Length: 337
View 1 (cartoon, rainbow, N blue to C red):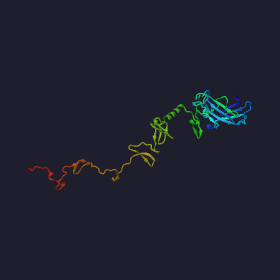
View 2 (cartoon, one colour):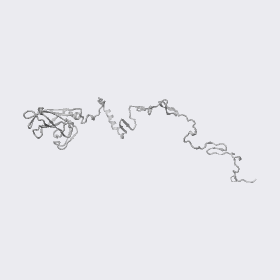
View 3 (cartoon, one colour):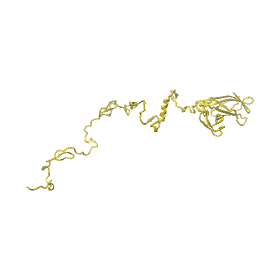
């Protein structure tokens, strides 16, 4: 209990700084209790007492982090009051939220006039805060300040709602049907694998992730584990067991066989190509309109096609037409005789 004499008023402070929280982040608050007495020891009974509460950084900066102004009716409370910061009061000041005011990392920057000295404050892990309380019960015109009070670590439970300033939603969690699961911790090797995977994702490295599909370029030389589908097995011993989901018979094909579809067995099988029959000339498509002769000549011709010659003694008188031989065709001969 702290007894303070301030101008015309006595305030007996049974100071309680308590953290109130709920499921909603914005509903968390700090509650401040006290009792306001007159100089004669009687409680203040005004129905419109204003309280101004400020949270400031440690001295000497004393920068204003957060401020709220509340009005309380003390006419029926024997001077006792209770104020909860962050309870939705409209009169607020400062540049940060309540939970940010208790953040003990990083740098805070303030507008001119918000600090006693300088305009920046770098928080340290062991820093406390200052609580400045002023009041006005309507019997004077200005705020009547109380000495600054050091805020220790009870309200710093607000910072426990975050880890280094980050809310729970910022962290990786495992839930089944909305129920948080307890998972074993990772060793450094598993973490390194995840880090390598994250660093490898990107078109420049040949790996892309789109929705539930992962595309990896290059070779599968480093792959471990088993695969399924049309191709099964493990790295180095994979086997194509299906084509487009249809079974392939596991059999060694003979010379000249090809893979064919067996409708009777509903699978792909090695088989011989069927022998060609004697198709009709009219059934042949793309056939030539004529073909050059070939082979050996006979009859009056001798030699081979395509260049046979007339055989000796093949041309007889019966094979020469009447008047077919002219004098010009006859060689001159001697008439000696």
